[in-house]
Image 1: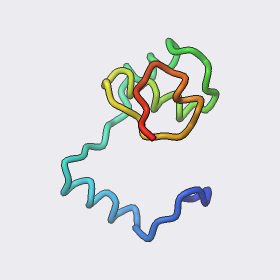
Image 2: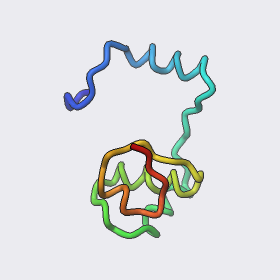
Image 3: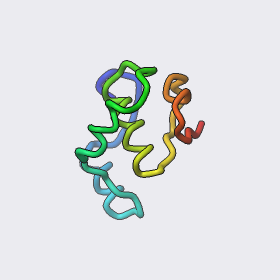
Image 4: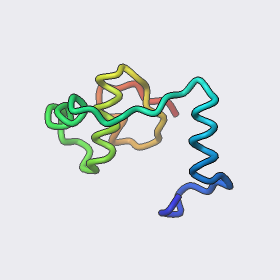
Length: 79
């Protein structure tokens, strides 16, 4: 949102509240995710996207994205 790529009328507090009352979870950054970053190919150069990819691989979770570089990894992407 701060980059102007996502427009929402919700505050951060409202987003966290919505997560809390839903069936969603906020994952903490685990050392296993950080270790996995160094094990995956360097297709994507953005370190935060690489953390998302590593997390998805370890947790066996899909990523909702249109980022073509993320879709080059062996991870399920939706969009």
